[in-house]
Image (tube, rainbow, N blue to C red):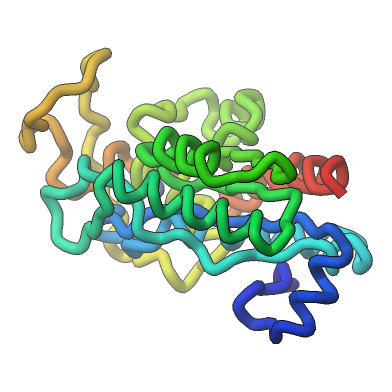
Length: 249
Ligand SMILES: [Zn+2]
């Protein structure tokens, strides 16, 4: 698979050359969080990383050379998954500071165009506030959740109008399909969970009641997931990311 150039694989003279081209600097943000018995803890990092690489593969060479992917921000904020082994969190205040420091460091490099490609639902308010605090007046920050780039019509067509919906899409059929398309070996196909989607109240509650969450950690049945569905969803997202990248460049 074609990759987006990696910031951390470059030397300082290569970074210097890149920065002179006013590149789009992409930060994949995710979580280290349980994703059921069938998906790895890094699922929310892997999906935006894979989507960035697929996007790079669709760009013209001279466009691709003006994009760069930072090391991902994996540790974020996923307390809803604290009831399962493996989840590792920063608290919201720390995450805000980390995002602010990153924005400040990118501004110090003279980076003007930043895109946060986010794969995890709970952290955007902290990421956004940190970026707002840390940027300088020359930095333009954009943030997009990859699932917001999936048109409702595409989702309905792929799941025959039976998608369980985004509020229960944690390690459910959509995430499973997308990871399956991007990184097939990462999906444990012999462990696909089939818990019924829990009814979720229209409010949040502390403390969280563990019995309100499915024991598998997957919030919706995954029996309909497939790599083909994932490919169709990725194509829709990548098309929009290509347009966004070209607008910025
Ligand atoms: Zn996820």
